[in-house]
Length: 343
Image 1 (tube, rainbow, N blue to C red):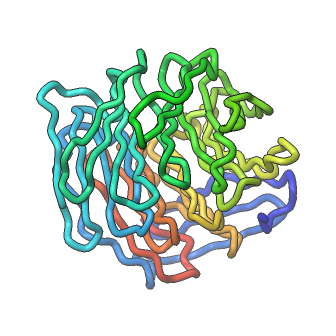
Image 2: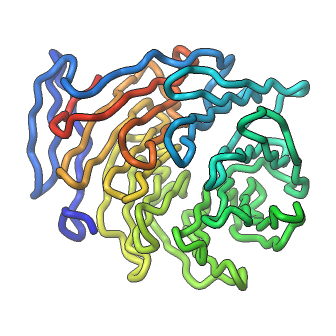
């Protein structure tokens, strides 16, 4: 799937000032682009309204809506073209830790620090259902592709499956010995991947809820993961500052992409798996375009650490991330393939 050779490594980009970015890919790429404002990339007005660090950002399946949640418990839905659609401010603030749209875009699931799993009607901005059961913060939420099953993972290592037709818990098991930080279904919905600070990515047969594989990766634990395009490719962000691309059938890492010195708190991949975006604890945001063998520095903001939230639209035409120095959601449209410097 990937154009780089198996085992190749992408070194971090280096910014030299004056609009010059060097992107070096070991044994594969060396590119220099000089540009202060790249043509073909358009920065939209930022979204403001959050009152604390932004914990998560995610796109709707059609890319027209953006959801974001913060440390104070505020939950926003933004229309990409028109701005804020609605906002929910809880009476008793409970941090928003995870968000996901349903496949039809009509529902939004929100995982909160206190263990609550909330289902929201996107059009009306109304809370329709709360699923109790987790004893720890709900770090990961994900709809199955058919939209009838929801998977949730929490800080106590528990993974749950929910039947959304009945609102009942379908299955529950201890998936890891430490916090479950992220989870995702394969496009077929037959396999669930769960990542944890215990360094493992476990693969589960959804029908039987049995584990059939465990991927042991770099140091520092798994902070985020996402299937990239198909059931064979999985992207994971690690505590050592690297992003790993896994080939699921062989259970091997095919590419390691060093990004930063601190944990990769968020990764996002396009629906075809050709672009991957990552945000780190020390303020880096980077994008890889595997069609063109490019690594793009979106943000190198040492004075604004803690990039917890990044999101790529499913079709790769836009991206957004939470910029916590201004408590804003930064957003860009993408139309030019030849850019290696953004900001």
